[in-house]
Image 1: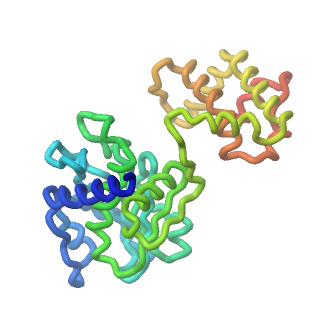
Image 2: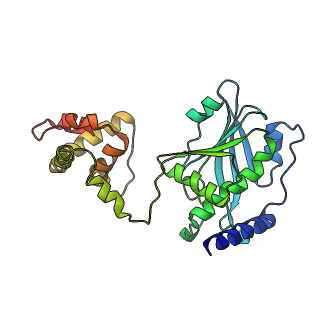
Image 3: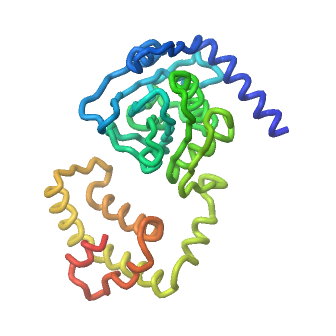
Length: 295
């Protein structure tokens, strides 16, 4: 039943896409800029300072808010294309959140000598419908976004396509491949978790067991120490923000910034850090500066 429902959903998306997006332009030896301009709903801006051997484009592509009822409205999805050649492979870089408008190339792109198409996830940064109807922020709607993008741009290129993503971007790549398995030739999903719900208790279980017990205890003690030194930490945060020319807009001001930072610290320590850092956790009698620097 699940497979049947999936096939029906995919068929409906394809049929309704015909309503919203009619046809794909033929490449016919066109220049990439001219080709992109010929794609219905595509805005194209060529950017300066591309990597050597590349051209660098900022794209905004009109997408349905609801792929099953495209007449309900649309939004512009932001993308960055690094074009090398029509014959090179293409890396479809799916992001789980916003995408930076930069000419950065992922390792996979460098290894393959590939074109790179980096896509911002729906409902983030510029790629936000107005109003924000959260019922359409789903993995199926996002997968349909990527499917339409591949349909629009892949015909220009003759090489293989590989999707890639990390963390939530890896999840995005997997879900796109799940619903549209023939859009790309391969998928490289890095550290892509599969959550069982908005609150998945397995994350808590993992954090209660990861690493050495002594390290977990030291890390929790360090978190408490930071909160006990709230005023000192807020002063150090403020000074550091001024040095970096940062401004905080989060409701609650520096108190909330500190609370968020401390709350996320335990998870971030094991997600991005090394177990070797356990020996570097400041003791309770460390100075304020030492406590702050470790964060």
